[in-house]
Length: 421
Image 1 (tube, helix red, strand yellow):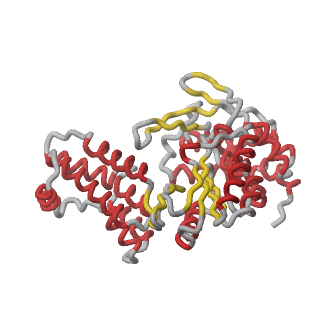
Image 2: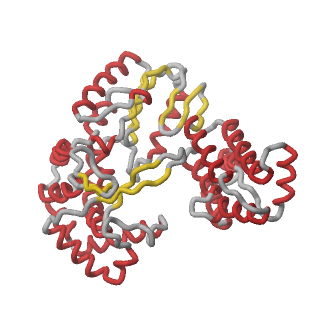
C-alpha cells in the first residue's frame, strides 16, 4: 500500500481526525478503568473535559497548527512485584489527544518501513509470534543451533534525540510532521517536584514513543534478519539463532558497534552466546533441555507477591479472613484469579507441567498458612471443608491443564472469571 505523504499533515490537523483521537482515548481509558483516575500535571481528567469536549478538540487542533509546546509529563511511581518502584509518565489529557491524532495518521508509514523481524507494538506481528518462532526453531534444532541473546539497558531512556530525528527524515516524513513529532521527542518531565529537560531518551506515556522505539533500531533489524537463520526483536529484547557459531560471533561484534553508534547500551548480565543445549532465557521464557518454562525470577517474584498480598493482611476473625480472600481472589481490579489467567494466556508456550503444578501448590500453602498460621496437609484438608460452598479457590495448574490439554478454550476461562468477579 502506497501512502500519499503530502496529504498527511492536513489529515492530522483535520477536525474529524482529532475527534476520532478524543473518542479513541475515551475508549482506551474505559477499557483500562482509568477514566476517573488518569490526570496529568494540570490535574484534568477525561470526565472533567467531557462536558466541554468540542472546545477541547478545537483548542487541541489550534495548538497543533501553531506547534504549541506540550506540557511536561508528570512522573509517578507504581509498585512492582518485587517491592521496588517503577517510573510511569502521565501526559495532560489535551496532549494525549494530540499524540493520538498524530499517531493514528502516521502509524501506517512506520509499518511500511519496519522490518519483518520486528515484533513489538505491532498488531500484525504480536510478540507471541516472535516467541513461537523461537520455540519452534529451538525444539527442531535443539543441540545443533547456537543462540545469541541481547538485552538493551533502559532502551527508550537512551535513544539519542537528534539521531531519532534523522531516522524520521530517512523514512521521508514531511518536515511539518517531523516538527509535530519533535514536540514529543524533546518533551520535559516534572519529577519529584522538579522540572527536568532530558538531553537523551524519549518520555514514555503516549503511543508515539512505541513508533520511535521500533524505528530507532530498524536498520539493524533489516541487516541482521538477512544474515542469520532466525532473528527476532521485541522492543529491547533481541535473539539471533544459527547453526554457525562463528557467524553469530561476527554478528555480535557488528551489533556492539552499531548499538554503540546509536548511543545505546547492552546489558552484559542478560546477554549471552550459547549452544541451545545450554540454558537461556528470552521474552520471559526459560529454555532448558527442550522444555519451555517460566523464567525463574518471574516465578520467585510472583510467589513473593502472593505472600505479600495474602499474609500481610491481619484479620481479627474467620469472617474477615473469608471476606478478604473473596476480595483478593475475585473482586479487586487486580484480583489473583485474573492474574492466574494472565500468566497462562501471556506465556501460553510454556510446557513445563511440573513447574506450574509446584507454583499452584505454593499458592495453596500460602492460603492455608493465612487461615491456620502454618501449613500442614491436614490443615489443607480442613480448609477445603471450611470453604466448601463459600469460595472455590482457583488453581493456576487447573487453568494450565484446561488450556494445554484441550479441556477449555482460553477465552472461555476469561468469560468464566468475569462471572466470578
